[in-house]
Amino acid sequence: MFTYFNYNHLMSNIIPYSHPYLNAHLDVWHVHTIFDDIASTNTYLKEHATSLPDRTLVLANQQNAGRGRFKRHFKSERDKGIYCSFLLKHVDVQKLNHISFATALALTLTLHDLYQTNIQIKWPNDLVINNQKLAGILIETLHHAGAMDVVIGFGLNVYLQDLSDLNAIALEEVVPKTLDRNQILIRFFSIFEDLLKQDDILPLYRLHMLPAGTFITTTIEGIKTVVQIVDIQANGTLLVKKEDGTPCFLFNDEIHIQPNL
Image (tube, rainbow, N blue to C red; front, side, top):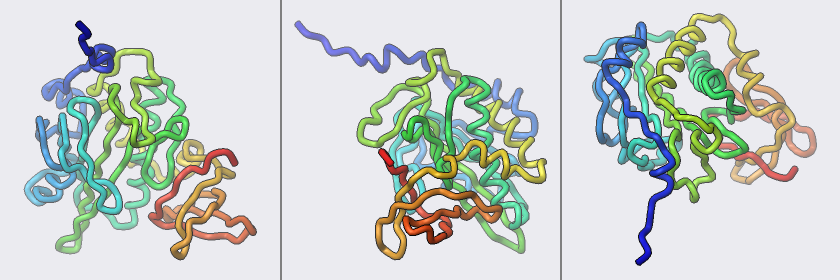
């Protein structure tokens, strides 16, 4: 009699979140709640931001209505990733780009430091390995009484899972060692806090983003267009050039890496 085994499950040595351990090692950050299942960690923080202190973070073992850019919704696999959102309160509006750069950089540097991964930042908010998505970041703002709060969420594919329909990859596919989500989070928030204190992290961001010369596709005036990356700007826009050399600035646009060019 044939018996089916889930080999992905057998290969993954899943280490659960430890609420006490995280709070003992996160310095100025504090884990408010680790949800077993929640619609969206970002939504939760947005709804409770006024009653929560600065540098609060929430985690989930599973999200059943996670949100990405362009109002996309997704369901995460239980215990297979890091589903995390965190809160920065009373933020200067001028610092928003710096926070965006710092988030992507902190996650990239964390995984490089811990696992020597070759990760690149795909502007504006994805991390990729071998042109496959490893993580996504969503940044949302709340304005009230002359101040701005920022909710930042990221989803990181950690353990082996079915990503066959998503052009995505899990960290476990490229790192041949046991992965500990607690250690990833501790390192991430340490690096993120350090980056927030620095004046100019754009040069470091450039080192880790898809390099100049990379061909990408995007939609310009309703037409799918192949363009070439030139540089990232301090205001967060991406400078690209069209096939005829015409420069163009992208702002919060969706891009896709163009293969075989």
